[in-house]
Image (tube, rainbow over all chains, first blue to last red; front, side):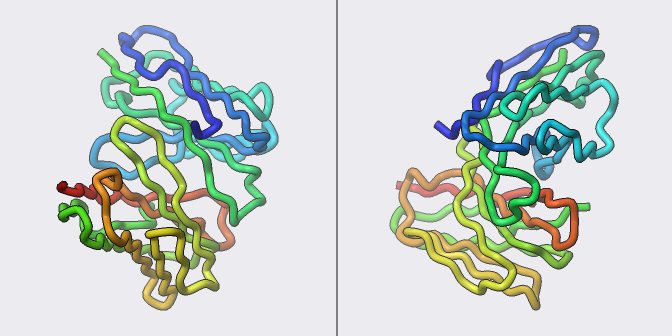
Length: 115
Length: 112
């Protein structure tokens, strides 16, 4: 149990569907992250929120829309996805972006498949 | 741009042997971290070494950092079947936006 919970664990959707991924952390952290993990590619940072404010958007297509209503919850809203968006989406949290010597804690991810 | 690059990409050894994985990076860093990922699971933090440290131990893990060569190594001693996983290094770039950049990882298989 890492203290970071992601739901759903698996998601299959068509290209025209709209779905959302959810991440919740119980660690009292103030920074939350979305990563994309594709086969044979390094983990890619997508978005960062620090104290509910978005501090990083790593040139992510607009079909991915993040939302951070509070420091404990992070969502990734998906719409009109492409087959190349099939991947493992990982959420992570850390005490805050200013805590440079603290590790990130990861959830187990959502395995997304686009038909 | 990709920061950490692990070597080898895959490693298969017998249980009880030591496993060594290497990581190279390109820029000055605040710290370097190693993570483990079991199949179908998220990443688990193993150890963090600061840029002013040269070696760090945690149980059966030993990490070294050579900032002059921009490289790090992770040594797992007396390997066990449960150590089978992918191992990633991640760097926090000095003066940057305090975000981790991960390498592609080393797939370690421990044969019983």
